[in-house]
Image (cartoon, one colour):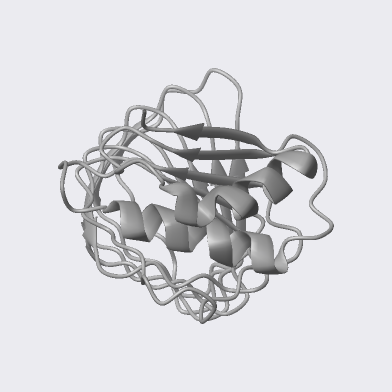
Length: 201
């Protein structure tokens, strides 16, 4: 099996086990899938929604472009986005850590849970894609994501985003520290492109 799609009001349960040759997995519904998440090296597309309790170290294959995992997951490890990633969503009680290094193909980035992901403060060195339309970041603990990181993120986004379309949102709030005047010009530019910006106040 290389391709699996299952939707509607299914209640799939049990330990998730993906065949080594699988490239596409999409499963929505009231699932309670569990077990250690292991993605085959050729997997390009993975969607798993429901009340899942997937665990283990998150390792994204180098060819993966779309990753979406919802539920009560406890995924761990250092966040590393493949060079061709376009869509990344990770919800649950995850403890992902590491440095967020964007890739130019990314259009949607969403991370919540018990994560301690940080962002480089050397503005101008991290290149986002011109079409990124959503960034949603919720660290678990206050004091880890600083104002300098918030400013750097907005400045880097403003330096590259030009053709984002559709619903556009930049939600850097919760335990993220508030931006300062250093990123005001960048935020004004992004607002002018149609982004709805939400920050800690």
